[in-house]
Image (cartoon, rainbow, N blue to C red; front, side, top):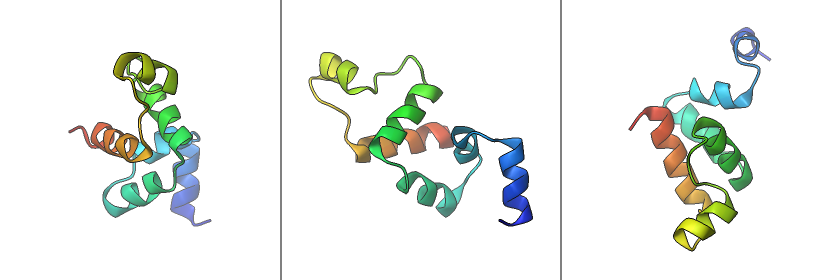
Length: 81
């Protein structure tokens, strides 16, 4: 582990915080490593009022969120777009 990675892990011990500090291709690479469940977990953590769980999505929209949709939502939330 290089020194900067160790410092980042000390500053943000939670992966949810760490990913928010990523940018560019590194951000995309990190998000693409996540499972659908990880993405839902992050989205719920970042936006507790959002509708991300399968149960809530089915009730509200009649369908569950696909992993690709979650990746798009997560990326927009991190980049502020």
